[in-house]
Image (cartoon, rainbow, N blue to C red):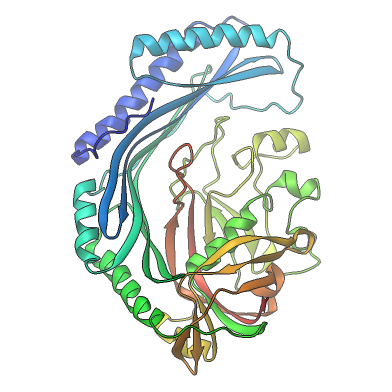
Length: 461
């Protein structure tokens, strides 16, 4: 069971040692299972683990704090083209975990006798693996929270701080052993002004930089002051807009669901089929890729195949490639990129443009500044038409000056218009954002994105 105690206080050496202890315990369990296999059996083992501190803040005060320590192992037993898997939470007690593996092995053997062959089974049979250990530069969670409270004094701030080690490992019965550790934090927060008016922000990374966090809070303070002005409601229509990196992230994160995978494209379910087929292109400055090396996700998947450091998805506005899971590789007779079974990008990277931050308001001129989008979904998947809402700190701008906050509006736009002919440019600076999702476990997803200046952006009732 996860441990939910007070936030831990650990040195960098202690954090690193925790990762290496989990690694050694996982390898020992894999060796134990391997020693129990019959001559016609193979196995793979995949572990996802974390040592995370969580602190919930409301009204700029700590309301809840705890620590979660969990290790979840998936064991797959393979006999020819037949396979079965079981997922179990480890206790951390070696003798108890070995018994769990022994019990799991017996149950899987019983299941294999009744299962059909899987024609698309593909798993790594390599004998050598990789190790990637992150640098444990995290702040102590108490120090981070103290810094947040001090910097945000006087603000009605609400948010969740999550930080600590995230680990992933793979082993097979051929001798392959892979390990990955990352030590990162994510503070997802909002600064409330009144009614439905608030400023949303985030600060994430691997090492706490006081000046960077101070600049984010200073920006939230400035926008909060602007929210005190009387809000406006504008007519539906087409407007020039600036989408901040967080808003761009919302759009591309929606596209990540079922658009970039080979399976969805070959079965004609992808939302970007017109782009894939070459019937339409995006702006030549649009370069999108899955950048595993530059993100916080492991460099290997649950089947043991290495993930490509970078997979170009769109280059110069044209379709450039797909994410290919091992199963899709087997089904369609191509090479795998090491993508997960859902073939979703976990490290989305959009290349920067040349719009300078200090010129953004002037370049926008008269239009709408959008910091965040909300509740995005497809209104017409076949044409990659997306709808959603503005919400946090959206402003009406006239002649390069912020005039008033805007009340919530709905937009309805296609990818091809937004990032095609209507794309004016992308910002020269990008923001690295870590996925704040903690459902089941802390996410290793990330986006590294610029902001986007767009003409003729459609807002509806």
